[in-house]
Every structure is written in structure tokens, then in C-alpha cells.
Image (cartoon, rainbow, N blue to C red; front, side, top):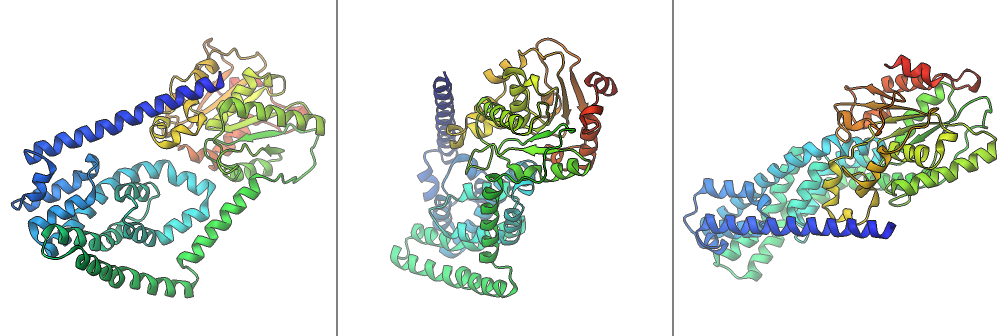
Length: 474
């Protein structure tokens, strides 16, 4: 049954990708045939192409899956090798700006908050060395130009450095192709001239600046080492259990569960807030990519948590736990409580930004090659069998589920962050926090205050009754 579901995922993702690629090429072919009144070769041979039209076509080029060298050849043929190279580089920079703006809007909401929560050193590296990364990527011809631009936007590279480094680094390649199209020199002489330009205008200044930066302790190499150390520490932190204290039998432990593609590091601030208030906090490494970033299936992880918790129950002689879960972690927690008998041990589940109705963002990932790899993306898509099965569950009488949700949440926007079982129940308590974004649930002080209010006393003998807390949030 498990393999059958995975094959269905593979077939669906493959079909979508084929349709998108075929549709893209069909659109590009028809556009260029209409624009050139024949084929793209007609545009290359047209020596009367207006400058405004050339620049406008450059802006829409990436969205028509058209390679950049074609435009450099077009510019060389129409405007001559020198002016053509400059215009081609300028046009490439314009197209870079168009793609960068769109990617930046997505990255600002999703990628950067994730990086700041999970890999702050990596984010620091990106912030300080972005122009060098752009320069290197643009100078290597086999690295796709537009794909790099998307990545620069998603990672929120500083726009002025992206634009400037793109223009400088793409100029030699533009000159090479415009020179070839102009046919006033051999390919060999054009290549030699291009390599000389790369050395003089890109490599030498880059080496000099890197040398000066290294003296100041802020070079690319130094930052890269810091990022690598962080990644190694991330693996170490997530794969070792740090026992900070003995279990207090008078307290009810709080299990923290993190979300998709996050790691235990994402829980650092939340754990500190709760620990300072006297709560006994536990968390598990849920595994996934590199053994660190949580990409395992929801059902599989719920079984893993069941196994780990029962070991803790036996080892420390307690049988009650409260769960606070973020994003995908809420689906895992609820599956354990409602489907695997976790309600015997857990009477209170608090979820934050959990995509109970799925997230449309999963489709953005599913139509990329990672859609072939990660099972959980398929499970979190809107209308998935897992989500339907979860909503069909009956909530045991002793269980209360608190949903912190927000209209500013880009993953589980508004009521998509609410669990709605088939049978209406006052055991699900919605708590709107519309000023909070998806990742802010993990570290905002007011979110911590709300969690403390719901959790009540950390001690077993003064544990808040669920019905009382339900009434307080109506």
C-alpha cells in the first residue's frame, strides 16, 4: 500500500513536469514564430530590430525558456560586436532583475525566515558574500543563468550587488557570442579576447578584494568555513541527546515537535522560554535530509514518536505528556494522538501554523525534482488522503486540541490552520494570532505567553483542567 502511494506520487509529479515543460516550449515556439514572422533564426538575421524591442524581449526572455546566448548573437548581428555586447549584457541584467524581484518576494516570506531559524551562520555568509557568489556563478557558462537568478532572489541577495555583478560578469560571454554572430573574427580570437576580459575585469579584482577581506577576517573562505562548521554542529546537535536535568515526577513534560525541513535548532528560543517558566521540555531528532532536516513521512514519524515516548515512559516512570507542535509537526502529533492511541498519554495538543487543509506551497515543490523524493510533500498537499483520514477521526473526550493560527501565515493561511473534524466538537479551540507569521510562532514572546497560558502549571497536582481552558478561550 505504501509503495502504491509512492508510485502514484511519482507518476503525478512526472506527468505535471512533462506538461509544464512541453507547455513552456510550445508557448515559446509560438511566441517567437509570431514575433519573427517565421522562426527565431529570422530574429537573429534581422539587422533592423529596434533597440526598444530588443530590450523588451530581453525582459520576457526568461519566461519563454529562451537561452541567453541567442540574444547576445542577436545583439551582435544587429548592433555590432562592441555595442551589441554592451546591450546584450544590459538586456541580461534587465531579465535578471525581472526574475529576481519575483523570486525575492517568495524567498522573503519562506526561505529567509527558515534560514534565520535553522542556519543563521549560513544566512550571515549569504549576506556578506553574495556578490562574490553571483560573480562566480555568472562566470561559469554551464551554470544556468535564470536558475541562478531565482536562487539569488529566494536567498534575498542584495539587489544592487546582484545587478552590478551580473552586468560585469556577463559582459565577456555577451561579447563572445556577439562577436561570433558578427562574423568579423574567428571563434578562436573571440575566445581569447573573452578570456582576457574575464581575467582583467573579474578574476583579478576578485582576487585583490578577497585578499584584503581575508586580512580583515571577513573573506569568502572564512565565512565558508563558518558555514561548514555550523552544518557539522547542526548534525551533531540533532543526533545527540543532551540531558540537561533529571525528570521531575511532579511535572508533566512538554514535547516540542518542529515542522517541515526544520531541525531541533528551530526550537531553541521556544525551549528557552518554556524552561525559564519551569516546564520540563523534551524533543527528538526526527531525521530526514542529512539526518537533520525533517522530511520524513507523517505516519512514519508518528510511529517513531510513539516508540521514543514509550521508552521515556518506561525509563523515567511517567505516563503523561503535553505536545506543542509547529507546522507539519502538528499533523504528526495529531496522528499520534488520534490514530496511534496517543490519547492515553496526551490530553492536550497545541499546534501552531499547522496546514490542516494542506498548503498550496507543496505543489510548488512537487513540480520540481524534489517532488520525486519527499513523501511528506505528497501528504501535505490539499485534499490528500492523509488529511482526509485525519479529519475523519473522532476526538477522545479527554483530549483538547488548541490551534494557534494567523492570516499572515503563508503556509497555513487563516482557517487553513484550523483542525475541523467531521463531527463538530468544542474540543478544538481556535486561537487567532493574526499578527504572527509562520516562523514567528517559534520565537515571539507573545506566542510564548499564550502557550504558557494554555499549558497552565507545569506541575501534575495543579494541572489545568481542559474544560476550564476551553472556556477561557471561547
